[in-house]
Image (cartoon, rainbow, N blue to C red; front, top):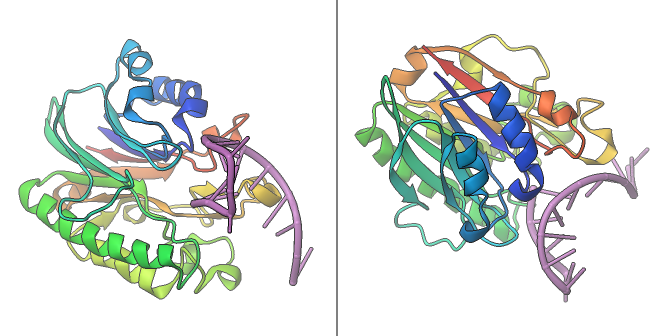
Length: 258
DNA sequence: ATGGTGGGTTACCCA
């Protein structure tokens, strides 16, 4: 079984690339972020024609999250219960795999813009609410995978240059503490369950030829409950879609579960 | 060290 997460930066633009990628990577679940579409504009018919079930929670221009699977999707939930938020950043569904239910939470964490800004404060509040939500999800679902764009590089080695990034947005102590609090619930960072090449990233700035020079960050993650982590046999970033024409600025991250 | 790009929209936008 394979689970993946990918920030596509506009599904309107990236749908052909997503369909191509899915054809080559028939994962059991794909968590998509930044669809930037309202629900009525979601390309559900195109996905269904290719054999994919889907759930989506979107809005105009910004944010928007979707889960795709060839298996049935049930127990669909949107947003973080009890956390008032106009922005569409969270969706969850239970994937009815042949091997049993897999709970998938898809999250697009707030970017935060700059330390000390209003958006940064919103990010920290979002992370605290997410932790409480995932605590409850874990209590109900043994097989829980939380995929998404967390907009946090967990450690200095998750940046191309700690000299530039340490203490900066996406790398501040408070953001990293918010991420660690998720791990402390009993979730494992699938990336770190297996050996990885140094300087492996999931996002590269469009500017300054960031991808060509591998000036990236590892900010997209799949967190696995203990039961899934025990069965995780591999994980890695697929950089190939980042080489496409008109690519997303993020690459997919995949975890394989036995 | 700076500024660069690419989504979206037509904004003092957001990443």
